[in-house]
Structures are given as structure tokens and as C-alpha cells.
Length: 245
Image 1 (tube, rainbow, N blue to C red):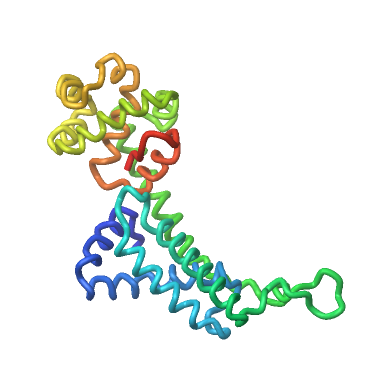
Image 2 (image 1 turned 45 degrees about the vertical axis):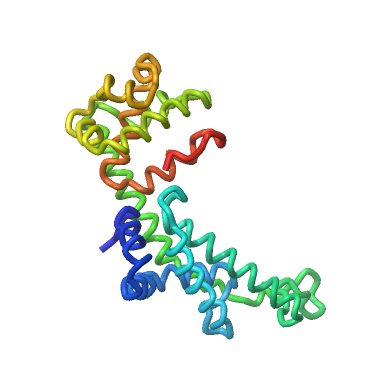
């Protein structure tokens, strides 16, 4: 069964304090860990790269311990942690003189490199899992928006364009997240409880009304653990002023 990112986030939180849960999570995502290792070394770990696979497993566990929802979706975060740890490993080994570059010239053939002789053995299974989970979550969220007469295009068109307006929307979101009953009301009715949100967040009602569709979508994204959706919404916001996670 394909798991969505919000399922994974719950598992990660459990694994932070439970070693058995952490071991189970690593076993469950060994395909992902192996795939990220292969992407980096361009060959199977069994071809003399068992150390790299062990380092990737350690990086995955470190990512579990360090992960917070503000960092975005977990699997991309773990992938970056694995890549960074492997880069550090290769730099250390290079300083020790123990690494042969994959770009070493090969024989007399012009332009030929050692990398060219390594077959493409990348396992795309885990990429498919992540992509399928993303598609499922997007479909579910699209259906939820449709129940309130909204589409992704509506949300994109209604997205704030200025940083100060994003900041105002973030204040609304932060206040709503501290009041789960308000999120539940939005989910049940598709309407913004304007008075409570305005007084609690200090945001002008006119600003909220101008970006009502966007705010409804953002608040709905936090009602049911749509972590992948939230990651994308975070990326489209201006860089300054903090995270939408």
C-alpha cells in the first residue's frame, strides 16, 4: 500500500523516541535509502560500495532524529541528508587519498571516463512510490477543494503577491493552527470565521476577504496532514518572512 507523506511524518515522529519504531522505519524505507545511494555512486552498493550504503542508512536515521514539519516533506529532506552525508564521506576519503574519481580518463579513447563504464542501475521503485503518493494527495486535496467550489487555479490566482500580505496570511494560519476548532469549522463549512481570525491574528478583514480562496485552501491543507501539498505551498511563498509549514 502506498503511504502518503502525512503517514510518513507520523511514523517519523514515533521513531524519534522509539528505537524499535526507528529500526522498522529504516527497514521499510531501505529501498528508498538504497535508491538515493545508487543515485550518488551511479552503481549498485554491492559493487564494492557497501560503506556508502551504511553511511546512507545512518544519514536516514539522523534525518529522522532532526526532522521537524517546518523542514517540508520528509522524504526529500531525508534524500538531501543522505546526499550531504555521502558528499562529506567522499571529501574525507579524497583527503586521505582513498578515492578514485569517476571522471578519471580511461585509456586512449578521447573523452572517455571511468563513469562511462558504469551501467545505469538506478532503482526507480521508490521514486515511483513518492510520485504516486504525491499524485494521490493532490487528487484528494483537489476533491476537497471542489466540495467548496474551489480549484487549484482559483487558489493560484488568489495567492498574495507581496511579502507583507504573505506575512498577514501567515499570521492567520499560525493563529488558526493554535485553535484546532477553527480549522475544523473551516473544514466543515468551507467558510472563514472572519471575526475570530481577525481578532486573534491582528489581520485586517479586508486583507482576509481579498485572499479568502487562498486562505481557505491553506487552512484546509492543515486539517488532514497534507504534507506534500504544504511543502509545495511553502515553496511558492517569498523567501523572506519565514515558513508556511
